[in-house]
Image 1: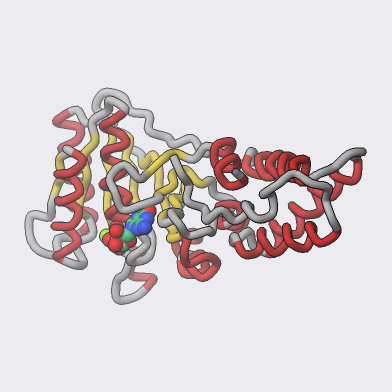
Image 2: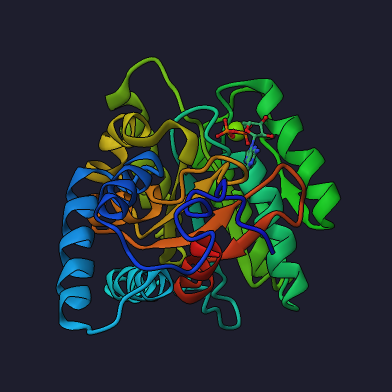
Length: 291
Ligand code: GDP
Ligand code: MG
């Protein structure tokens, strides 16, 4: 599986040779360009320097290995495990939130397939009732993934009602996982947060919400994170999904975003196809980043 991180480090590590002074500047530039953010870049450089200074022989292969270890250590502070525990009559409910256009609906389609592939039954709820086209878009993805969908019974129905109906049906039909699509934009930000709050309250009358996944578009970097502040402050986010990591050369965003939000990345989207979603595995991620 290619992470498509743009081979940011290829030039730096193209051949094993003695480290030269400019390599440190090049490493800094590479980390900044790959969207690691200033804080993670500085701390990573300092940590690599510390280990490197303690080593006797040092070539660029050592540098790559040390960098990999330092990065993996940073990722180890976060637990990427998705909570999808379900029991009879108690499906795991996943609420998917985020600003418009980041890839929520696409992610839900891929995620439904991801779950089905692991032998569980998923159902999706079209609680983005703000735009009529959003329901049809989710229906198309549900069909591709081979899962059921609960639609609004009337145009513009209360999203909380759709979410409730989806959970009710999941219980009646024995689905394991419920995935709820939500709107990314309403007339006001507080209106949107109130709506999400209501969805949660109404659903939690029947079952607890297992995950609130905030979807972030990796190509928008820090700006995208700023736009998502309201979700981080008010939506009870339990995990991040980073989309559009394919070909974006922005793999460092994973580090910046986790550390700034203190929320673990749990899923990564890297393409528009139904199979272009994976769980987040730090070791694999770092290897792909540096290879
Ligand atoms: P929503 O408004 O948050 O529901 O976003 P959508 O799911 O409608 O996606 C917006 C656009 O982003 C669509 O054109 C998707 O095909 C695209 N998209 C979503 N995820 C990815 C991804 O991982 N990689 C790429 N390249 N495009 C993506
Ligand atoms: Mg959508």
